[in-house]
Each structure stands twice: as structure tokens, then as C-alpha cells.
Length: 56
Image 1 (tube, helix red, strand yellow):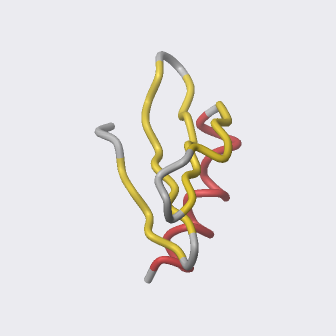
Image 2 (image 1 turned 90 degrees about the vertical axis):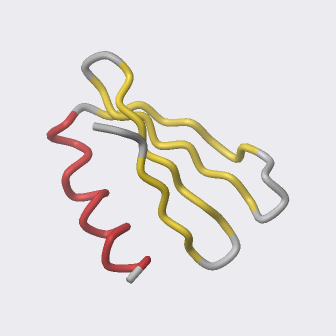
């Protein structure tokens, strides 16, 4: 998986594959990293669905 970016109001979430996990990096509008959270694929599916719905 290449990295994928979701643009939401007041922040951006980028999802990248790092080894066997997906890493969710959240940045504010200024580009400052708010958080970086690793998740397994199983944990990531519900998060990706929510992000896709909110970003649409």
C-alpha cells in the first residue's frame, strides 16, 4: 500500500504501511504532527472506513 492522505476539517491524516502495521499520522493545518499511531491491519479497517466517509 502506498501512503494515502485524507483531508478533514482542521487536520490531515496520512496512512502508510510500515512493516506489518499501518501507521496513522495526524497533522494540523500548520503541518505540525499531532500524533502518530501504529495499528494492525484488523484494527485499521474500521478506521479507514470512517476516514473515507468523513473525507468524501
